[in-house]
Length: 511
Image 1 (tube, rainbow, N blue to C red):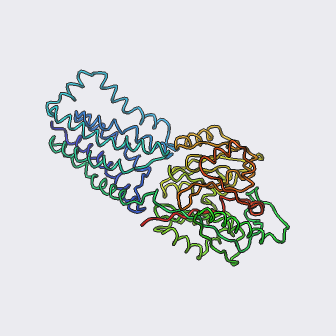
Image 2: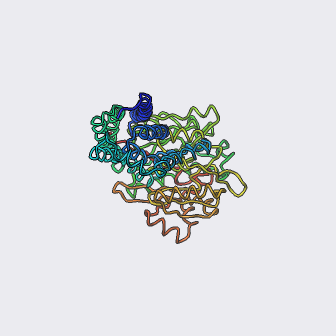
Image 3: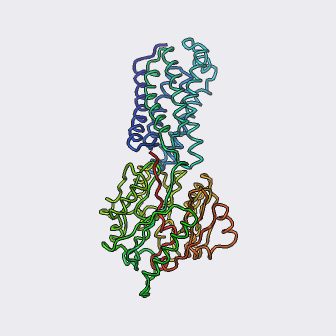
């Protein structure tokens, strides 16, 4: 069946948008050395789907309409889960949502005519039509697989199975297009080249289960009350103890010995006296490492904490992590915007979700940049103490481990935001262990689940935190890992941080 030139141009425009989406996605994946799932990919997918819907209707091709129907709402789900609908006018979202229903209404309105024109099309023999439908179904099943895979993890991914189905489906659609003399449909599948490349990137990516994680700890050269951080860290307390440095070192060394006695890999770096860095023993605030070889550097609120990015510590991190790229966010310091790594964020590394409560140390705009560059979904909310002050770091009111999350629900003031946090935790398979406000003040959330060299799980917390928990809470945690209790009262009192803050995960990238 011949169609007017403008119909083919419309189809070519839709295919061009589809091609642009995967070109951008491929470029971002090559740049980061891992398969990315950027928001623009899903936005362009949604726009392209509407145009190809119209093209299929004008071409009287049921296989095209059927194929677009399978993935249409999945595109919308990905846009939603990435938070891209926040600034889109609601009428536009509603119009997007009802578009396929309008097509369906037109079909139902004159169903006999639809059957005659689309299903009994003299230009498309039944066997060819079935093959075309099967090709579209195979191709669009990639989005179904992607949805199931991503839904379980609470954010948007483009996994290996997605690309396998994409390649197989593309080959079938190209064949169908050539037989039907639909050059738009055949040429539109040039994206198979990028699907194959994404497939290769997936296969070459390091296995997350095979990576080795060590704990980096910095032995402080000068530990004292830090006036620059005390402005918004209500957990800090001044002390007149003249022996505080010796007491802090004794607690630090005792914690290292305890971890090493359980065969937990620890890398200890000696701090230097110059420049003076009173909070150097909390290294988890200024950097993070990731399984793809990324080292992320963060903008710090306190000027003297920015001095913790010392060359020797950086050298050790790079060597231990096998760093392949550096994501430097520190430029935000000049603009007064901050994000203090795994203090400001609690990362669910498996589901790739960054939980964060707003505070002077946690800027939404920097959080968005981290999530965009590292492929995370942000779950942002407000959490305040009983005086209405923002909780300065998320990791004092929340912790996420394998199969569990410890949360102080009481400080999340918005019922809607609390429901959002709980929904994401439950969707990603976390058992929520609720703690009270008083337990939070005793650092019951400032804990970390770690593994030793044999793969045994432990949960590291201070004795202050453990003594505040009841038997039910301890029993729930013990099911997720043996509890290791460290004695660090002076560090907690003067520094305003606890066990989790002292341990920065260094994840070795397997080349």
